[in-house]
Amino acid sequence: AGRLLAERHRRHRLAEPLLPARFDEEEAAQGEIETVWRKDGAAGAVALRGGRLVGYLVGAPADDEVWGANEWVELAGHAVEEAEVVRDLYAAVAASWLDEGRSRHYAVVPATDREVLDAWSRLCFGQQQAYAISEVTATPWPAGVRKAEPRDVDRIVELAPLLPSHQRLSPVFSGHRPAWEGDTLRAEVEQDMATDTIGNLVAELDGRVVGNFEVVPVELSSMHTGLARPERSCYLGFAITDPEVRGSGAGLALTQASFAWAHEAGYESMVTDWRVTNLLSSRFWPARGFRTTFLRLYRSIP
Ligand SMILES: CC(C)(COP(=O)(O)OP(=O)(O)OC[C@H]1O[C@@H](n2cnc3c(N)ncnc32)[C@H](O)[C@@H]1OP(=O)(O)O)[C@@H](O)C(=O)NCCC(=O)NCCS
Image 1 (cartoon, rainbow, N blue to C red):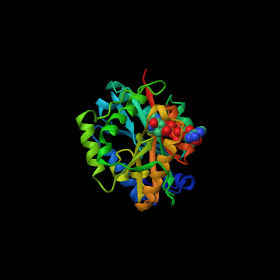
Image 2: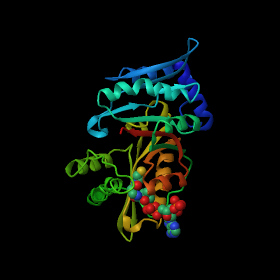
Image 3: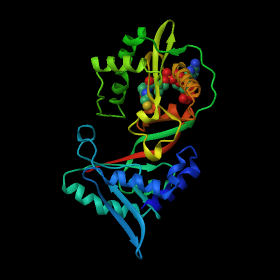
């Protein structure tokens, strides 16, 4: 299975060279598979042709509070020699998931492999979340953006909930509630602001803060792990602008400042992610040069 995943990753890196090179090696790839295989409740299947391994798939439950009664095929959770084999592998594992009442299925799939994506879509899986990457190059600091200061805390706490509330609207309909609300949010904002390795940036218009982006070391992301975590990479993990100023340049300036901050901090790449159904972010990030690396697909039965 390590061989299959290393082969998949090498193909993926031909399309997206910023992905980490270390998983080109079978041993490192195998380590990722072992990690998913050791998760509580993990189950999987292998496909054989003439005694030769031509595919594997491993899934495990994630937090039911967040994802419902779920099973996840993670970043390293499958690799196949022929796309069509994905459908046999899923068929072999999914029956036991359903028997246990676990009917929400997630699969993270390389975005550049159209045939494998097509095979998943013919299993009724659709695009939920995009993971993306961009190189970090020298970028001039834009006008109107600065690092956040303690005097900005109240306004940041006011702006932050606009992100989850936007995600609850049509056509995202995300039921996901962030862990931070009220005092927890304030404490987190204050803590991030006091951390040198975090870039907490605000855009101002006529003396008022109208947007807030945050860039953190990629190691703080629980989504961009393993095959999706290059070295010397940072994570654009939070972005909001005041709905009243959207479309007037605050987001552009904050993105530019994020890259300027990241370059000064010595990062070589930046990752981010978005709900594919979020009309604003799914159009905004690709236009800023982010290239989709992985897609999280979702199927709910019925
Ligand atoms: C995504 C988001 C941060 C972008 O911020 P924004 O303030 O709308 O960004 P801008 O105004 O700088 O840019 C938006 C568009 O207006 C354009 N624009 C900016 N200034 C402009 C101007 N003066 N005249 C005409 N167009 C302009 C930009 O080029 C961009 O269009 P493009 O992507 O087609 O190039 C914002 O839409 C938002 O907060 N969305 C809700 C929360 C969210 O989804 N966050 C991201 C989660 S992953």
